[in-house]
Image 1 (spheres, rainbow, N blue to C red):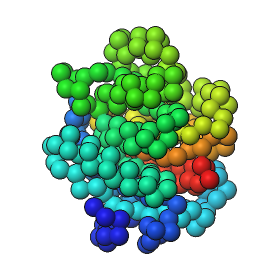
Image 2 (image 1 turned 45 degrees about the vertical axis):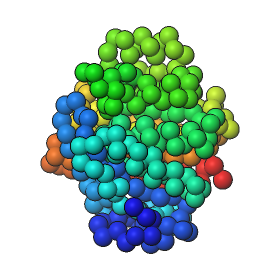
Image 3 (image 1 turned 45 degrees about the horizontal axis):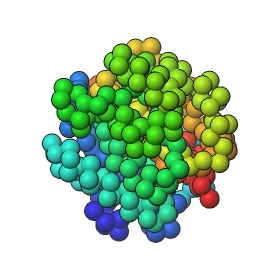
Amino acid sequence: MRFDEAYSGKVFIMARPDHKQADAILYGMPMDWTVSFRPGSRFGPSRIREASIGLEEYSPYMDKHLEEVNYFDAGDIPLPFGNPKRSLTMIYDYVKKILDMDKFPLGLGGEHLVSWPIIQAVYEKYPDIALIHIDAHADLREEYEGEPLSHSTPIRKACALIGPSNVYSFGIRSGMREEFQYAKESGMHMAKFDVAAPLREILPSLKGRNVYVTIDIDVLDPAYGPGTGTAEAGGITSKELLEAIQLIAEAPIHVIGADLVEVAPAYDPTEQTAIAASKFVREILLGWVNRAK
């Protein structure tokens, strides 16, 4: 898929028509081939875009307007249904093109495995990268029922690639005993249950570093984000996630890309999950784009 191809679907609010002049490229990864519970996150990117129509273009959190950020919505990558290996290769190639153009990649999932090829592509350009991972699940399994390509494995893969000490997980409240043991013994940083408070403590130690951020919508308590494949009780509020996004925006770090994954619209007839996700995307665009410049 070329960036100069016309995208016939709905785009995120105030997206610009020219990718060449854009500072950020928004793209969708409609894949849910490896989910372990409820499928449907492949429909997440399109619903997030549609929900963005209800947003105000001004953010009182950032005191910025979307007209101040030049971003292009490239639509969804046309991933082959049911083929995770080929899909991951396509995502990697796609993100690499974005990075080669020196633009900020902002991906919408899709299941969390889609973050793995993005991390690979980002690491090739920024070998000193740190990863901020906000999620309900540890995602530190080596495989799920014998399958290494699973949405429960991307952070373990990231640890092997960039080193556990460069991985920072927040909001974790679910996983196998072995996953929590690995986090404890490997040297990675894991904050259980909460996000904003431990993030505030960690961010100063990342001063000056290139940082990639991956957010799984299921970090929210199901009361705030029921539309996800593997909902976990005991999560954070949407207010706390907005606070975390703002903390990252204000930190002395270089955010060089991000993704937001696991929105599954079918499980939320109220659409509050997609509405919240679109607001998080707005705040990311306003607060994180151009941080590396």
